[in-house]
Length: 377
Ligand code: NAD
Image (tube, rainbow, N blue to C red; front, side):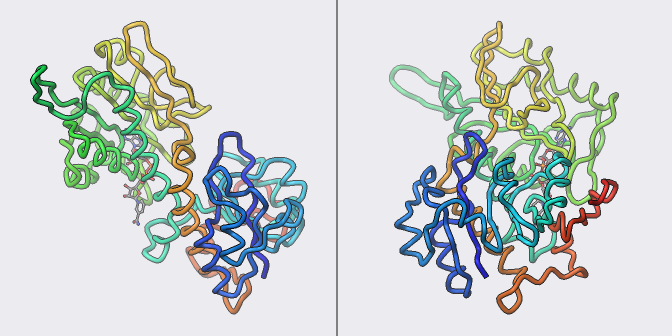
């Protein structure tokens, strides 16, 4: 079976789906590995390093003709046009927020498998959990951005030129990214507080060194599968108002809140930003074209408000550490691929919860239960 890696087409995407180490492991498992020339360049993996790992370096057309095509993010229109019926595409396809892509994949007869739909709570899914591996990187990098944008020290420093008090950092959303942001800010010496709408995250946040904040106006919003549910309008308003008081008392705020398949919740309102001191920094990891966790934040841009608060729309952070992000992603996608293979061929078992969790389209139809309301092709 031929498995290929193509160069990513999303603007700014520097990750690659397989690194040479993972390519060698797939070769050892009996698969033929094709790598589009230059696919790893932006993450510093050269064509030669893939060739040394036993992969064949080929042009894009040949890579796109493999039995299984591996990607990090969604295919663009030209890539879609090159795929043919019966081929398998594995990547982070965001099917819940891109129904048009799902229909196009089904229409083309492509078997689409999406790593971001993995049932993450299954113990056997853990080595394949790309959402967690990439969120870890993003959380780490968000804390570093907060530290570099902040015009003062994170740690307590006692010097002959005076004493600097430690920065007060607030992390909103304590999932995988939030916990890593807390740990990183703590290691840099900041005093860290954290809040999440799922109260069960309290122990985890405390275990990495944060003081957990509870809001009296909003109860638990724990939803299905370890995720948060979307808040009601009233809950949202109460949350924003009560959070504003806490936000004003912090120097750096890092927001990571997400609700699967929904626009990110707004946690830091305009009023909250106005109440922050000049020189404060807000890093919005929820920043997306649909809106973010912070009023006015724009993905990929940094600006300073009239009252001197720096707002960073921190989108696409894993791509800013492409070496580490690609290595981890490559392990995740290889683990999934090998799980789906029996005796050298893909074996998509209809009675396996992990397989049905990631399988989006097959034989011209949209087969994922969460997308069942959509028209099949
Ligand atoms: P996520 O990226 O979907 O969300 C980040 C955080 O934002 C979550 O903790 C969520 O509760 C929080 N959030 C959402 N709306 C909010 C709001 N209005 N206010 C404040 N916070 C809000 O989450 P994630 O990091 O992908 O993972 C979520 C959880 O999934 C983890 O904490 C864990 O419990 C579970 N998980 C389990 C496994 C496993 O069992 N192996 C693996 C990965 C994740």
